Length: 214
Image: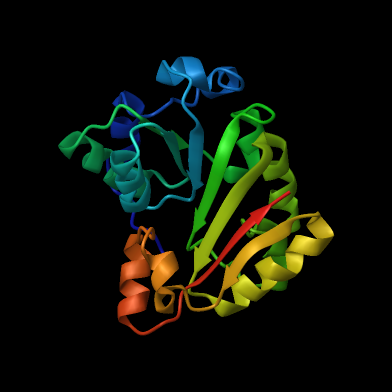
């Protein structure tokens, strides 16, 4: 997907109080409780897009601290605009590449990880870049608290099949796997949809989801 560059987005991000700036990020591991000013659990969404999912989650769960991670400035800008309209004290943003996730969160510092409609990187040579790949699962294993969960949703069946196949070699186990999330009334009771989920489900695309742990 081609992302339109929005003039001034980097400047807005650099001045935003909702963003943990790049210069500060190396000091973040082990200090997220201090950043939020409380001892609440920390949930992160990697590749948050325009921020609808994580903003909704933070609003519905004020007892949890949320960190939204997005690499594209023009997309992160939209999440910042949501926060300007409705500020939430338990939500922070990071503009960064997910490859550097272990440089920003310390070992066992994260209580839950969300991956929603991640870039499929369809070419085989780019498999290591896929967020549910074994390479990224190894990174998540460092920052995720023991026995905590990672949730992944996508409408891309090929990416989902790849993600499921990566679990065993990566040493992860599935607590739940569904290939049609929206047909499960129990799972849908607590489901919060992303922008892409609303779009693709309206088109009739089945939404796949798994919940995994180490």
